[in-house]
Image (cartoon, rainbow, N blue to C red; front, side, top):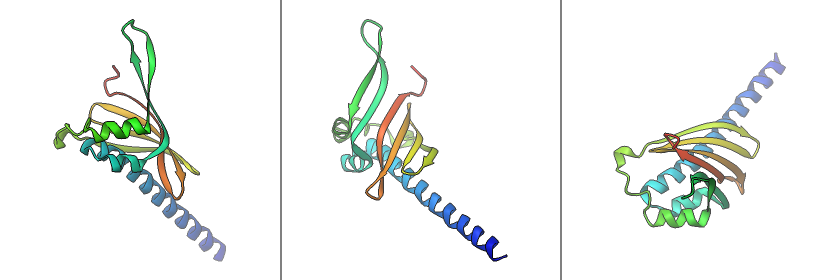
Length: 141
């Protein structure tokens, strides 16, 4: 009986810790999204690892497909310039779906108005940071 109670207590504690980690992951991604929509560069920067790689597939003038790359500094600059702040509040859709958490890594799908981000996060210095983003327009074009 005592072993059963210890096992149940351990499982409850582990489940609670996982929920806390998932809350912290979701908060990091929410700050990334909200920072973009509000033009809050500090909120955006707080969410990003300095070595962020944000990519999407594009087509050049010759019809060739290639990757567009953006780093953390450029994303913070775009946020500061208000590039995402023109979206009316009623259209500022934000959905965070945690796909997987394993140790100090996590994978998240973030859906915003008009596009989808696939995000990888890392747990460093007692907080979650976004290190990779692969994004595409919601309609796939």
